[in-house]
Image 1 (cartoon, rainbow, N blue to C red):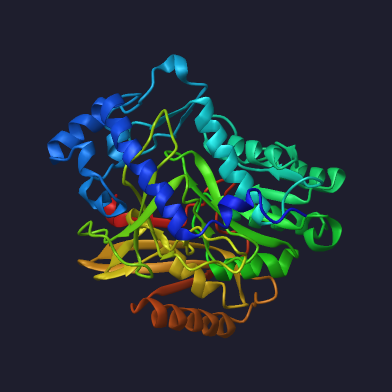
Image 2: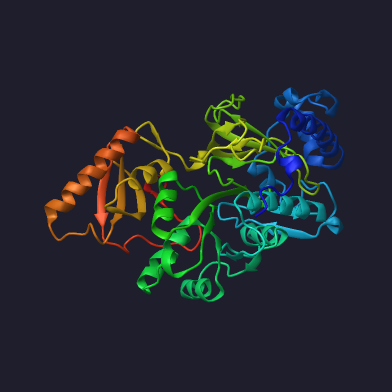
Length: 434
């Protein structure tokens, strides 16, 4: 098994990586100033010129870029190359407004593929593996991104996309899939369907690795998945604006490696925009150092995490982001307390009597915020004794209050009550905004 895709780069000392970053940052600022009318105007309005950027410390002189900027310049107003130099478009769903359009030159595709080749190698995926890709194909970046990365490392790709779950399980068995890539919610559903068919993923398939992303999931959820299915579960990260899936954890499962020769990352205070120091929790900001068609400078991702620059036990020197707690815009404020769905999941997954599927419902009654969590019971915990259910609800409510610091109403429901998802799971219904 290959341990590194490019050991010279992946183990390069951080100070040498920062020299590369500094040069690429200066080149990038000049490039966008010359080729992007959007960035030229933004820089001019901000009072900064390319010659003002002399070191990495000058990064904070540059303005932020927001998702709204891509929507405001729809479809290609931020591009740095004409359409004839593009080899592909990807387009977001646009469910909350205008979609975002991302274009790719051939070099952009190559950089994307290299990023995933490094990532997949770091979790032991390569030649001899059959990788079943359950992310959506088409305008969504997940399927094709994972596809190109898997082929680059020599794996055999099974491009199932999402849905048709019985068929997915059949193919896992018949073709001997060893790696599955999909949302964690969909894999949980797949495992549930397998059980209903009398098939054990742990005992009746050759799956050994799961690559799960496109939605936040907790460390406790990882434990549940690994114990119930026998696979190693890895987190994958990326956004459609950056190029879709780009990075994974390595086999150490202790943070996601962000390739410093391709991307420059910061953590900022989401309220003030001020840079935070290593180890402080805040909003992730990424600057692309190698993209041609749609480079992004100080792009505010919105995800809340922590950066670690400590050399990983795997030997890779590139900085890591710790598990994403959630998105800044996914955070609920309930009676003045900040609540992330991931915190709720983390508590629930430590209670053996409850299942993996839950829903958070927030409402307002007489000007008071009320939060309720519906959670399915496991078959083993289901009881026709009302007192047993009440006691379990009280335990769950107590554990949630201890972590969230607010009282939460808990409603235990039968297995199969919460809607299942073949993509990103919807875990919050906030009726206060309806």
